[in-house]
Image (cartoon, rainbow, N blue to C red; front, side):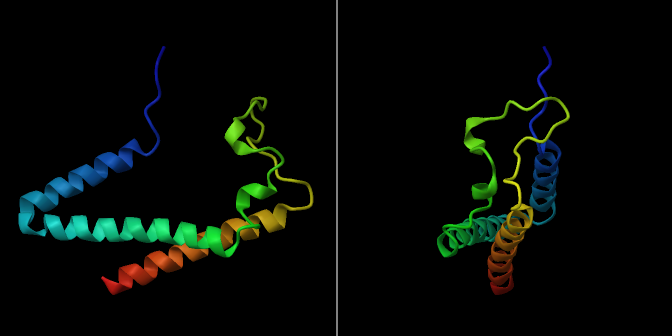
Length: 113
């Protein structure tokens, strides 16, 4: 009946409004904004693939009980994907490691701008 709005729609609208403000205030800066956004996007992708290539056997999703790509069938108010018992800390460490690697690459590229 009612479709929910996609996730992060509010952030997308805010980004569009901010680009419109930049275009109104200083239109000559639009190519610079596009350049910087493309570099940061490339840094995110590079950081993700760097993590995957450095730690091929320690992917965060490898500690889940079921393959997340097959969807969920959990009961209401239950977790979507259970972690293999005894591997909760390793799962957390893998998630934090990936965030640190991606964040470091993004920070390195951003400091180079």
